Length: 129
Image (cartoon, rainbow, N blue to C red):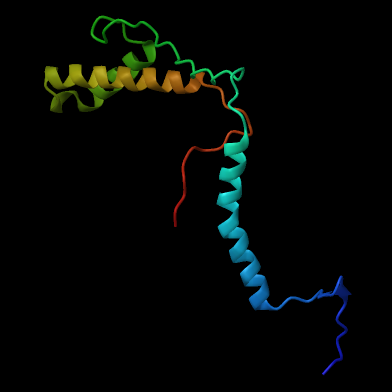
């Protein structure tokens, strides 16, 4: 075995055992919440500090009812393709509902496309394995 030198700093060994290290970490974990509550209790209430402003809600565009609004040309083209392809299988009520659904999807796509993302924007989800 190699002869290891123990460096002493103010009478204490520089090498700590695993048990001493674990005890130190445990003490730090127990003491951390106590220290933070003590420090937060000692800070005087900030009378001059303003409450954070509530987030500004995005104004919703005043749109007419989907049945009254003129469909966009893209939605009209999609509806026409669906009518040509599946027209013999759809009754007029189903075709009208399909046109409304397509118009809603096109409007949603336009709203999503209008929201510009920066290169640094990340997806908003939490991955749990």
